[in-house]
Amino acid sequence: MILGISASGRPAKRDENGRLLCGVTEEMVKYILEKTGEPYEYMSLGGKTIKGCQACLKCAGTNTCVVKDDWAEIRDKMFEADAIVFGAPNYYGSINALGHAFLERTFSLRHRSQFKLAGKLNAIIAIGGGSPNPAEEYTRKIFRSNYMTEPVGVLKTTGLGQCYQCGYGENCASGAVVPRHGFLDEIKDYHLPHVEADAYRRADILANRLGEIIRANKKA
Image (cartoon, rainbow, N blue to C red):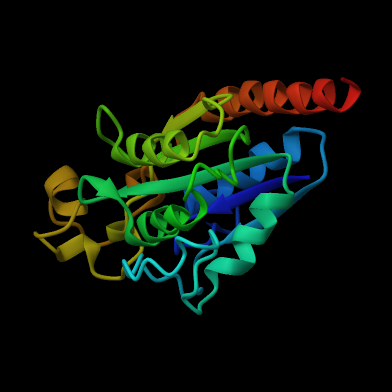
């Protein structure tokens, strides 16, 4: 089973023509899962309570975090999974808070040289700008600290700005719409940003590669 995790709080949403309006992280995680040809489970951190590490050190003796929230449920699914596909967006030049808190909590899994995620296959999806992309960089850092494999692949693509859907973007000089298009009477379809044209092609390649590795491991 492949576990897909979206750290974004925004679910994918489409208009009446099937065009993606928001939720690129969820869209790309689900797309890759479906294209691997392997059984999978998808989980979103949106709507869940995921606290950051409390530095209580109570995990040191057992490699088990004692903080009571929704993290442990997903942790257990990570243990069971053959691979993890983790997607997160770039907010303000950093990985978003939900993604950061979730990954930070894996500190509880790596005490006394007992790395519970060691050798776990993975792929990374990083949404939004930045070079290097901060969501990718932080995810890589945490995966390496847990001695997971190097990513089978990394998919980076643009996000769809919240300012286009907030209801005030056409007249808000502080947002993303007006600086790009000027003051508008109405945000039209042609104003909306698009997912990069080749994102799905690159996602197909990553998904195929991940699926083939998992199938090869099962035969070994």
